Image (cartoon, rainbow, N blue to C red; front, side):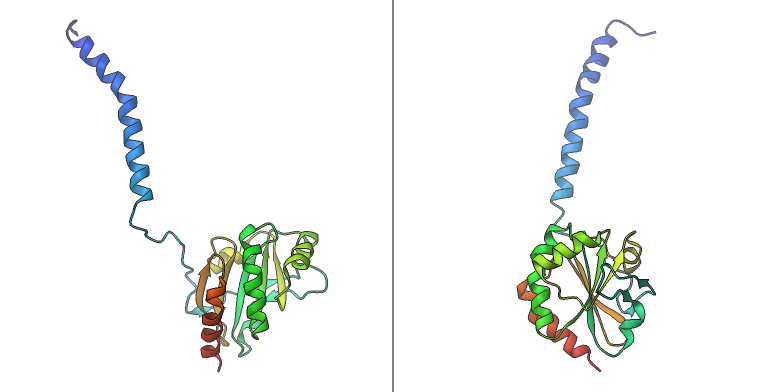
Amino acid sequence: MTSEADKPARSSWVLWLPFALVLSLGVLIWWGLSSGGESRLVESRWIDKPVPEFDLPPAMPGQPGVSSRQFSDGKPRLINIFASWCIPCRVEAPQLEALRDRGVIIEGIAIRDRPEDLARFLADHGNPFVGIGADQQSAVQIALGSSGVPETFLVDGDGIIREQIQGVVTAEMVPEIVARLERMER
């Protein structure tokens, strides 16, 4: 049995409980946001391994699709995962054009896109792609270990994925990407 003296102590504890929970949640959020700049990017498990097997149909008429068989022809290239609905992909487009102009082979994988939207995107932002595969269910994107768009993989002439660039390819990155691909040539 509880005495009358215990009731005020218990009721004041109950009043402080929501405040303690909110304070704890705030501390957890602060700790998560200030965790020393640790990378939260997901690295593909395919780095230094052959491109996984896939065969994507063309994403739009007049443009070939993309198949993993293409990546073992002795020519290093990029796989660029993008979408017409992706705002950062629009920012990246001029850099992909600059890479193409410097002789880089770029294969595109369009994620959950419609041919008409893709055609409009390419008309507005340029088409640096040799082929564009339609990945309507993101199955190849997931198989490659990609966690978003845009994302780019550097593949050597033997079809081995050597590097992964998560996010936008910037203008500053263009010369280094070209140099890396030149070092991969057999």
